[in-house]
Amino acid sequence: MEERTEDDAEEDWLQLRPMEPLPSQCCGSGCSPCVFDLYHRDLARWEAARASNDRSLLNEKQSQSCSSELSPETFLAFRISAMERLPADTYHIRFARPGNSQLGLQPGQHLILRGMVDDLEIQRAYTPISPANAEGYFDVLIKCYKTGLMSRYVETWRVGDTAFWRGPFGSFFYQPNKHGELLMLAAGTGLAPMVPILQSITDNADDETFVTLVCCFKTFEGIYLKTFLQEQAQFWNVQTFFVLSQENSPEQLPWSYREKTRFGHLGQDLVEELVGCCRKKPFALVCGSPEFTKDMAGCLLGAGLTKDSYFLF
Image 1: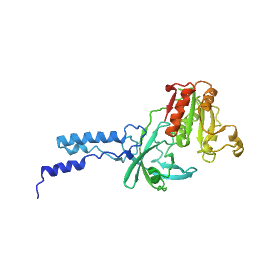
Image 2: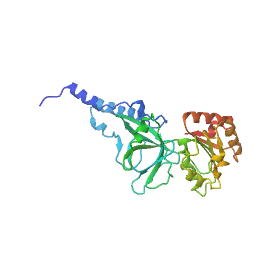
Image 3: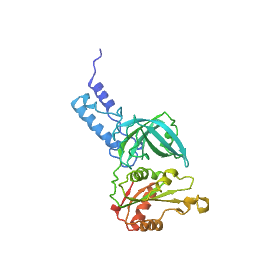
Image 4: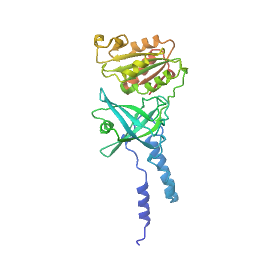
Protein backbone atom coordinates (compact mmCIF):
# COMPACT_ATOMS: atom_id res chain seq x y z
CA MET A 1 0.00 0.00 0.00
CA GLU A 2 1.40 3.36 -1.04
CA GLU A 3 2.36 5.54 1.90
CA ARG A 4 0.61 8.91 2.09
CA THR A 5 2.81 12.00 2.20
CA GLU A 6 2.39 15.26 4.04
CA ASP A 7 1.37 16.83 0.73
CA ASP A 8 -1.44 14.27 0.41
CA ALA A 9 -2.65 15.07 3.92
CA GLU A 10 -2.53 18.78 3.15
CA GLU A 11 -4.58 18.23 -0.01
CA ASP A 12 -7.19 16.33 2.01
CA TRP A 13 -7.55 19.23 4.40
CA LEU A 14 -7.82 21.75 1.55
CA GLN A 15 -10.67 19.74 0.07
CA LEU A 16 -12.52 20.01 3.39
CA ARG A 17 -12.05 23.78 3.57
CA PRO A 18 -15.42 25.62 3.45
CA MET A 19 -16.10 27.40 0.17
CA GLU A 20 -16.64 31.15 0.40
CA PRO A 21 -20.17 32.11 -0.71
CA LEU A 22 -20.76 34.02 -3.92
CA PRO A 23 -22.41 37.45 -3.72
CA SER A 24 -25.55 35.90 -5.27
CA GLN A 25 -25.91 33.69 -2.20
CA CYS A 26 -26.53 36.70 0.03
CA CYS A 27 -30.16 37.85 0.02
CA GLY A 28 -29.15 41.38 1.03
CA SER A 29 -31.82 41.72 3.73
CA GLY A 30 -29.44 41.95 6.69
CA CYS A 31 -30.18 38.48 8.09
CA SER A 32 -28.32 37.20 11.11
CA PRO A 33 -26.70 34.83 10.58
CA CYS A 34 -25.96 35.73 6.96
CA VAL A 35 -24.44 33.12 4.63
CA PHE A 36 -21.12 34.92 5.13
CA ASP A 37 -21.51 34.63 8.91
CA LEU A 38 -22.02 30.87 8.49
CA TYR A 39 -19.00 30.68 6.19
CA HIS A 40 -16.73 32.40 8.73
CA ARG A 41 -18.09 30.14 11.48
CA ASP A 42 -17.35 27.02 9.44
CA LEU A 43 -13.96 28.40 8.39
CA ALA A 44 -12.99 28.93 12.04
CA ARG A 45 -14.12 25.37 12.82
CA TRP A 46 -12.06 24.04 9.88
CA GLU A 47 -8.97 26.00 10.96
CA ALA A 48 -9.26 24.65 14.52
CA ALA A 49 -9.69 21.08 13.26
CA ARG A 50 -6.74 21.42 10.91
CA ALA A 51 -4.49 22.90 13.62
CA SER A 52 -5.22 19.94 15.90
CA ASN A 53 -5.37 17.45 13.01
CA ASP A 54 -8.76 16.25 14.27
CA ARG A 55 -11.44 15.84 11.60
CA SER A 56 -14.08 14.93 14.18
CA LEU A 57 -14.35 18.65 14.95
CA LEU A 58 -15.97 19.09 11.54
CA ASN A 59 -18.84 16.72 12.26
CA GLU A 60 -21.13 19.46 13.56
CA LYS A 61 -21.27 21.09 10.16
CA GLN A 62 -24.61 20.82 8.33
CA SER A 63 -25.86 22.31 5.08
CA GLN A 64 -29.50 21.37 5.50
CA SER A 65 -31.57 19.95 8.28
CA CYS A 66 -33.46 16.68 8.57
CA SER A 67 -35.42 18.12 11.51
CA SER A 68 -38.90 19.59 11.13
CA GLU A 69 -37.92 22.64 13.20
CA LEU A 70 -36.88 25.85 11.47
CA SER A 71 -33.33 27.07 12.02
CA PRO A 72 -31.65 30.30 10.90
CA GLU A 73 -28.49 28.34 10.14
CA THR A 74 -29.68 25.28 8.23
CA PHE A 75 -32.07 24.80 5.33
CA LEU A 76 -35.21 22.74 5.80
CA ALA A 77 -37.17 21.08 2.98
CA PHE A 78 -40.84 21.95 2.42
CA ARG A 79 -43.15 20.43 -0.18
CA ILE A 80 -45.23 22.69 -2.43
CA SER A 81 -48.88 21.75 -1.91
CA ALA A 82 -50.56 24.47 -4.01
CA MET A 83 -49.65 27.23 -6.47
CA GLU A 84 -51.79 30.05 -7.82
CA ARG A 85 -50.65 32.55 -10.42
CA LEU A 86 -51.80 36.07 -9.63
CA PRO A 87 -51.66 39.23 -11.80
CA ALA A 88 -48.34 41.03 -12.28
CA ASP A 89 -46.29 37.80 -12.58
CA THR A 90 -46.80 36.95 -8.93
CA TYR A 91 -47.38 33.52 -7.38
CA HIS A 92 -49.28 32.61 -4.22
CA ILE A 93 -47.59 29.41 -3.05
CA ARG A 94 -48.50 27.09 -0.19
CA PHE A 95 -45.92 24.86 1.49
CA ALA A 96 -46.90 21.88 3.63
CA ARG A 97 -45.80 21.42 7.24
CA PRO A 98 -45.59 18.00 8.93
CA GLY A 99 -48.90 17.09 10.62
CA ASN A 100 -50.57 20.12 12.16
CA SER A 101 -47.33 21.78 13.20
CA GLN A 102 -46.87 25.53 13.13
CA LEU A 103 -44.03 27.33 11.39
CA GLY A 104 -42.98 29.22 14.52
CA LEU A 105 -42.61 32.74 13.11
CA GLN A 106 -43.67 35.96 14.76
CA PRO A 107 -45.99 38.07 12.55
CA GLY A 108 -43.88 39.97 10.03
CA GLN A 109 -40.74 37.82 10.26
CA HIS A 110 -39.26 36.45 7.05
CA LEU A 111 -37.50 33.35 5.73
CA ILE A 112 -34.63 32.80 3.30
CA LEU A 113 -35.28 30.70 0.19
CA ARG A 114 -32.40 28.87 -1.51
CA GLY A 115 -32.49 28.34 -5.26
CA MET A 116 -30.22 26.88 -7.94
CA VAL A 117 -30.00 28.30 -11.47
CA ASP A 118 -27.31 27.17 -13.94
CA ASP A 119 -25.34 25.64 -11.03
CA LEU A 120 -25.39 29.02 -9.26
CA GLU A 121 -26.79 29.11 -5.73
CA ILE A 122 -28.96 32.11 -4.90
CA GLN A 123 -30.81 33.17 -1.75
CA ARG A 124 -33.66 35.63 -1.32
CA ALA A 125 -35.87 36.77 1.57
CA TYR A 126 -39.67 36.32 1.59
CA THR A 127 -42.26 36.93 4.29
CA PRO A 128 -45.00 34.33 4.83
CA ILE A 129 -48.49 35.82 4.54
CA SER A 130 -50.24 33.00 6.40
CA PRO A 131 -51.40 33.55 10.00
CA ALA A 132 -48.66 33.03 12.58
CA ASN A 133 -50.75 30.23 14.12
CA ALA A 134 -51.47 28.44 10.81
CA GLU A 135 -51.23 24.68 11.27
CA GLY A 136 -49.84 22.32 8.65
CA TYR A 137 -48.86 24.95 6.08
CA PHE A 138 -47.46 28.39 5.31
CA ASP A 139 -48.06 30.69 2.34
CA VAL A 140 -45.80 33.13 0.51
CA LEU A 141 -46.17 35.68 -2.28
CA ILE A 142 -43.32 35.68 -4.81
CA LYS A 143 -43.15 38.19 -7.64
CA CYS A 144 -41.16 37.05 -10.68
CA TYR A 145 -39.09 39.35 -12.86
CA LYS A 146 -37.92 38.69 -16.42
CA THR A 147 -34.25 39.05 -15.52
CA GLY A 148 -34.44 37.64 -11.99
CA LEU A 149 -32.40 34.53 -11.20
CA MET A 150 -34.70 33.46 -8.38
CA SER A 151 -37.65 34.13 -10.68
CA ARG A 152 -36.28 31.58 -13.17
CA TYR A 153 -36.02 29.06 -10.36
CA VAL A 154 -39.52 29.71 -8.98
CA GLU A 155 -41.11 29.43 -12.42
CA THR A 156 -39.84 25.85 -12.68
CA TRP A 157 -41.82 24.85 -9.57
CA ARG A 158 -44.75 22.48 -9.74
CA VAL A 159 -47.04 21.14 -7.02
CA GLY A 160 -45.18 18.32 -5.26
CA ASP A 161 -41.75 19.89 -5.71
CA THR A 162 -39.52 20.64 -2.72
CA ALA A 163 -37.95 23.98 -1.76
CA PHE A 164 -35.45 24.75 0.98
CA TRP A 165 -35.97 27.52 3.55
CA ARG A 166 -34.16 28.74 6.66
CA GLY A 167 -35.14 31.27 9.32
CA PRO A 168 -36.80 33.01 10.96
CA PHE A 169 -35.30 36.46 10.57
CA GLY A 170 -36.51 39.97 11.32
CA SER A 171 -36.14 42.42 14.18
CA PHE A 172 -39.71 43.75 14.34
CA PHE A 173 -41.84 41.92 16.90
CA TYR A 174 -45.45 43.01 17.10
CA GLN A 175 -46.87 43.34 20.62
CA PRO A 176 -50.64 43.75 21.06
CA ASN A 177 -51.71 47.22 22.19
CA LYS A 178 -48.13 48.52 22.34
CA HIS A 179 -48.98 51.17 19.74
CA GLY A 180 -52.39 52.77 19.85
CA GLU A 181 -52.41 53.10 16.07
CA LEU A 182 -50.45 51.55 13.22
CA LEU A 183 -50.02 53.18 9.81
CA MET A 184 -49.01 50.52 7.29
CA LEU A 185 -47.54 51.70 3.98
CA ALA A 186 -47.05 48.84 1.50
CA ALA A 187 -46.15 48.68 -2.18
CA GLY A 188 -46.71 45.51 -4.23
CA THR A 189 -45.48 42.40 -2.47
CA GLY A 190 -44.44 44.71 0.36
CA LEU A 191 -47.95 43.90 1.54
CA ALA A 192 -46.62 40.53 2.75
CA PRO A 193 -45.38 41.42 6.27
CA MET A 194 -48.48 43.56 6.89
CA VAL A 195 -50.85 40.62 6.34
CA PRO A 196 -49.91 38.42 9.34
CA ILE A 197 -49.54 41.46 11.59
CA LEU A 198 -52.98 42.74 10.61
CA GLN A 199 -54.54 39.31 11.02
CA SER A 200 -52.97 38.84 14.44
CA ILE A 201 -54.66 42.09 15.50
CA THR A 202 -58.12 41.23 14.19
CA ASP A 203 -57.90 37.65 15.52
CA ASN A 204 -57.25 38.96 19.03
CA ALA A 205 -60.36 40.39 20.66
CA ASP A 206 -58.20 41.98 23.36
CA ASP A 207 -56.06 43.90 20.86
CA GLU A 208 -57.59 47.34 20.33
CA THR A 209 -54.91 48.73 18.04
CA PHE A 210 -56.27 50.89 15.21
CA VAL A 211 -54.82 50.10 11.79
CA THR A 212 -54.69 52.20 8.63
CA LEU A 213 -53.36 50.10 5.76
CA VAL A 214 -52.33 51.86 2.53
CA CYS A 215 -51.71 49.53 -0.42
CA CYS A 216 -49.86 50.87 -3.47
CA PHE A 217 -50.29 49.06 -6.79
CA LYS A 218 -50.11 49.92 -10.46
CA THR A 219 -53.67 48.87 -11.33
CA PHE A 220 -56.85 47.70 -9.62
CA GLU A 221 -56.47 44.31 -11.28
CA GLY A 222 -53.00 43.99 -9.78
CA ILE A 223 -54.13 44.32 -6.16
CA TYR A 224 -53.24 41.18 -4.22
CA LEU A 225 -55.51 39.43 -1.72
CA LYS A 226 -58.61 41.53 -2.42
CA THR A 227 -60.95 39.20 -0.53
CA PHE A 228 -58.72 39.19 2.53
CA LEU A 229 -58.39 42.98 2.49
CA GLN A 230 -62.16 43.44 2.14
CA GLU A 231 -62.76 41.11 5.08
CA GLN A 232 -60.23 42.93 7.25
CA ALA A 233 -61.76 46.32 6.43
CA GLN A 234 -65.01 45.15 8.08
CA PHE A 235 -63.39 45.24 11.52
CA TRP A 236 -64.13 48.29 13.65
CA ASN A 237 -60.44 49.14 14.06
CA VAL A 238 -59.22 48.69 10.47
CA GLN A 239 -59.40 50.98 7.45
CA THR A 240 -57.83 50.34 4.08
CA PHE A 241 -56.82 52.71 1.28
CA PHE A 242 -55.40 52.10 -2.18
CA VAL A 243 -53.07 54.16 -4.35
CA LEU A 244 -53.01 53.19 -8.04
CA SER A 245 -50.19 54.63 -10.14
CA GLN A 246 -51.38 53.62 -13.62
CA GLU A 247 -55.08 54.41 -13.37
CA ASN A 248 -56.87 57.73 -13.11
CA SER A 249 -60.61 57.10 -13.37
CA PRO A 250 -62.73 56.23 -10.32
CA GLU A 251 -65.58 55.27 -12.65
CA GLN A 252 -63.57 52.21 -13.68
CA LEU A 253 -63.52 50.91 -10.10
CA PRO A 254 -66.18 48.97 -8.17
CA TRP A 255 -68.31 51.22 -5.95
CA SER A 256 -66.77 49.83 -2.77
CA TYR A 257 -63.30 51.05 -3.83
CA ARG A 258 -64.06 54.50 -5.18
CA GLU A 259 -63.98 56.48 -1.94
CA LYS A 260 -60.88 54.79 -0.60
CA THR A 261 -58.70 54.92 -3.74
CA ARG A 262 -56.31 57.65 -4.83
CA PHE A 263 -54.46 57.86 -8.13
CA GLY A 264 -50.81 58.59 -8.85
CA HIS A 265 -48.06 57.93 -6.33
CA LEU A 266 -47.98 57.99 -2.56
CA GLY A 267 -46.13 61.19 -1.71
CA GLN A 268 -45.61 63.80 0.97
CA ASP A 269 -49.05 65.43 0.82
CA LEU A 270 -50.96 62.16 1.09
CA VAL A 271 -48.70 60.81 3.85
CA GLU A 272 -49.26 64.00 5.85
CA GLU A 273 -53.01 63.63 5.29
CA LEU A 274 -52.94 60.00 6.44
CA VAL A 275 -50.93 60.83 9.56
CA GLY A 276 -53.25 63.73 10.29
CA CYS A 277 -56.33 61.48 10.04
CA CYS A 278 -54.99 59.08 12.65
CA ARG A 279 -56.61 59.31 16.07
CA LYS A 280 -53.18 59.72 17.66
CA LYS A 281 -49.63 59.87 16.35
CA PRO A 282 -49.17 56.44 14.71
CA PHE A 283 -46.32 54.00 14.60
CA ALA A 284 -45.65 53.37 10.90
CA LEU A 285 -44.61 50.17 9.14
CA VAL A 286 -43.16 50.45 5.64
CA CYS A 287 -42.39 47.74 3.09
CA GLY A 288 -41.78 47.86 -0.65
CA SER A 289 -38.92 48.45 -3.05
CA PRO A 290 -35.77 50.13 -1.69
CA GLU A 291 -36.78 53.34 -3.47
CA PHE A 292 -40.31 53.24 -2.01
CA THR A 293 -38.99 52.55 1.47
CA LYS A 294 -36.51 55.42 1.29
CA ASP A 295 -39.17 57.82 -0.03
CA MET A 296 -41.66 56.85 2.68
CA ALA A 297 -39.09 57.33 5.43
CA GLY A 298 -38.57 60.88 4.21
CA CYS A 299 -42.32 61.50 3.96
CA LEU A 300 -42.94 60.23 7.48
CA LEU A 301 -40.23 62.49 8.88
CA GLY A 302 -41.77 65.37 6.94
CA ALA A 303 -45.14 64.50 8.46
CA GLY A 304 -43.77 64.94 11.97
CA LEU A 305 -42.86 61.37 12.91
CA THR A 306 -39.48 60.66 14.48
CA LYS A 307 -37.08 57.90 13.46
CA ASP A 308 -38.18 55.78 16.41
CA SER A 309 -41.80 56.07 15.26
CA TYR A 310 -41.49 53.88 12.18
CA PHE A 311 -40.00 50.58 11.09
CA LEU A 312 -38.70 49.81 7.59
CA PHE A 313 -38.91 46.16 6.56
